[in-house]
Image 1 (cartoon, one colour):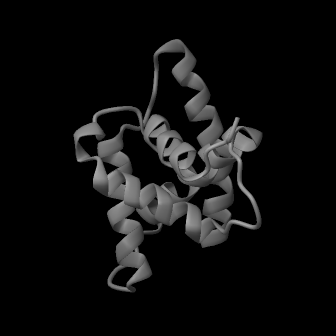
Image 2: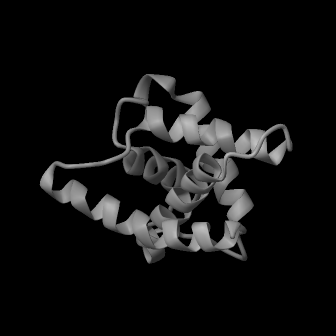
Length: 117
């Protein structure tokens, strides 16, 4: 069931990020951080809120898939690594939490996987 939720969210995230071209976004950093905390609780097996946990993972993977070839990733990167990169960025930049969540995840990934010119 959890994997079904994650798959559905992964397909929804690009749709949510695409709406930003029109000045509309559905998830800001505050909401993504809230879902991040649910994800961390689930990882520690404290509690399991499949919705918050799945929303964080699905959103981050959806943005990663949307960016695709614009990231310069060498080697195999796992979902767990991408979640950790996004989580670290969010925790280090609380002043940006009012921004659209896709922008925060994009900044995190581009910082972690820059392309050399």
